[in-house]
Length: 227
Image 1 (cartoon, one colour):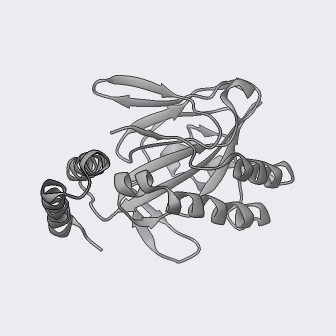
Image 2 (cartoon, rainbow, N blue to C red):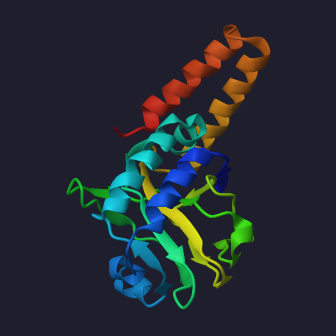
Image 3 (cartoon, helix red, strand yellow):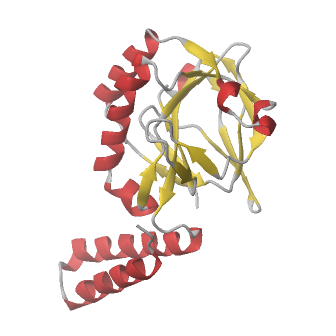
């Protein structure tokens, strides 16, 4: 499932993050890629321990934490510390690849499974040419290029790439989620059920049907979740 989420960040939060980026020092992105991905990765990113990332990370995590649809869709157990990358000039693309299944989180020393990948856009789409996130799946390819503050979530198993940026700079925050429900099909079923329940509650309130479906949701979550 590919899911786009609008307004994860407010306009004021985007401005705050961009101010941090404007004064930051960049490093080659391939330094944090595996051997195979490093040959395909040609971008820049902020160092994990940089002052800019120290200021940006809590803004992004707080924004994700308050977004109900993000929680419903991902059922997060752990969120990898967000990073920020830039595509521009000669460092302008990332070839087709699949993200590593396991990531080491420097701030905790924990290893986490990358069930879901997330890109949070930080530059308005009209400010740069190219730079689409291209998601490849058996049903065809989809190109994603969203407004600043919007995000896209997709399974970590997905083959994807970033198209070359030919004008301007593509800025984005990227992160991974280890879900309490690792199976994509089960997680999507729970998400669909939760959306149905919320829609019914808006129309008819908490009647016997919505209460029964809520019970079914939690019983399925209890059966499938790993906390």
